Image (cartoon, rainbow, N blue to C red):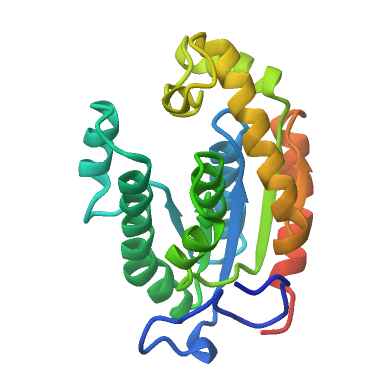
Length: 236
């Protein structure tokens, strides 16, 4: 995979057949962050702001493929997936959305807002012991985004927000499947620290912009708007 971000569209590795980079006139903007980071709220706020400015937008995210999303959700609910099968399921979900949603939207000049992208998927797999080179190969068709904003939130704040939202912690977001602790709270804290450590390693490699996600949504949105405006005014 390429390790630097440059102006103009690029693939991380092997492109999909028939995808001409010069045809992709839109922008791909990614928000990364854990559950409870405020990621989805910021996507909605950015979408409303961009559409008020006259930009067409398309939203994508994890487990939204019409091909496998329902099957992936059902398999996770049953806790019947091995780590490798789970990786391949998510890679299929991404590939379907990439070919049928992201590429057509970029061709049409839309702003694609990704509520997480391949980085979360790679971090999850690597933390679970997958070979990094193999994980990267799963997503070699992906485009390098025009910008990646990572909402970093302390694990303690993530716990509080998840309890306020759902009155419980997620089995998968707590890393309970990898045996960090029998106590879900303790497992959640350990797992989120592992994920954040992996994202720190990715920052230098992939050129993330780190956003302090511990603040109020309006303050975060104001910072994101300014940074997204810079992306939109970059030469095509």
